[in-house]
Length: 330
Image (cartoon, rainbow, N blue to C red; front, side, top):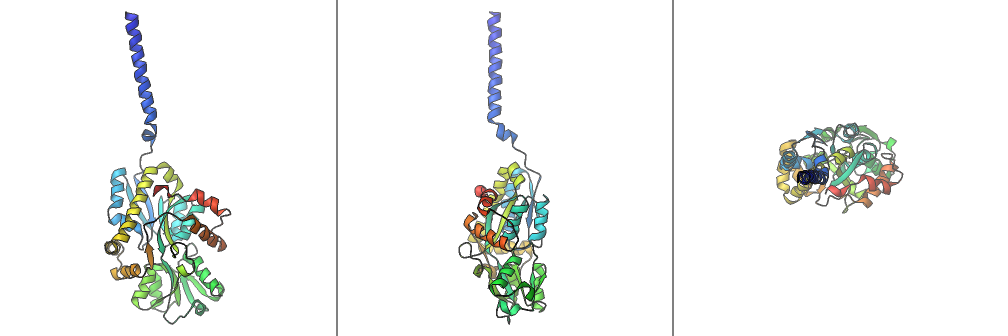
């Protein structure tokens, strides 16, 4: 009897241990999931970007509360220095122009998760400038060779039969361009909204070229901006990555459905005149959409353009996009 009872207890203990082991294995992925980092570093620029709406509307706060983390913005004047920080591992997410996104995908170990702004870039000139050809011998500003505006300016010159050396191309921070144009220190500049809209609303500049006329890639518009995430961050924090992306999806929906609310939020956080933002939205200087899925056919054409102007050097674009574009978080 004692032997039977002892054997029964041993069997019971083994059974319990087996159940615990199986249960532990079943719960393995959840139990082994990496805790969220205390800080999510998000690169932005001082313009009407959707991450500001995600923050002001409380969508990022919901993510912070759920994952016990903090989403902090790091501001850059344009995509070049932003990409340097991204490649150095100093940013986890980065909202920027499509050319800097492309560079981050190729050289900065980034994945493109969405495209949330179309159009956005334009060439602004003094009212008396009639065409791109009239810029010969004139001073024209661009944000930098690491920006998407620089190759677009080269494309515009090329289409007009003007060589780059025939124009005095200078680098200038976009925030200073409208003022320089007003002072007639420039004949023209290429930038993104709201830096483009400022000159038009101020009455001292005009839209010389909308880039959608140069590269209509989606719904008749140019691909303006997107968001990249570091591959390592996404691999370690898949659910947090999904939550951040979903907050951005909500931000774009708010911009489309409640533009007046978005205008007030941008004005408050960026210190911009509401009239400038309203003009931009009404005149589609920047186009916000709900379909944020990156269009691979459009991106293929875009990378061919970037390869031509030596911004990127991707030999097999289709295979590259299969690896580097990840819409699974949408």
